[in-house]
Image (cartoon, rainbow, N blue to C red; front, side, top):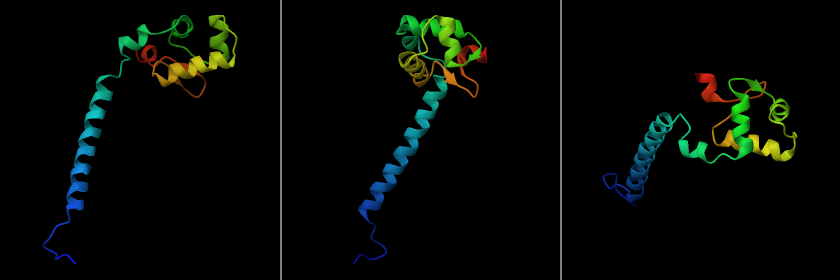
Length: 107
């Protein structure tokens, strides 16, 4: 049995890990805030449909069906997957009434 004056190495290790996690969270938050605009690399890798969606949407908030109609595509599972991919990459957001481009809306 340990005496009260002896510290457990496990607790010291956990304390260090906890400090490192806090530092990483802080760095991640700073990085996220500094890169609120989508990097040019993400925009450079858009396919034709993705670019057409962003260009057509402008500052509007439209449903997936309306976007597909305006772009000239079928509102298929492939088109919905394209919208989902744009949302996951942070180039579109989904609001209560449809999709919108957060970069165009902010300006």
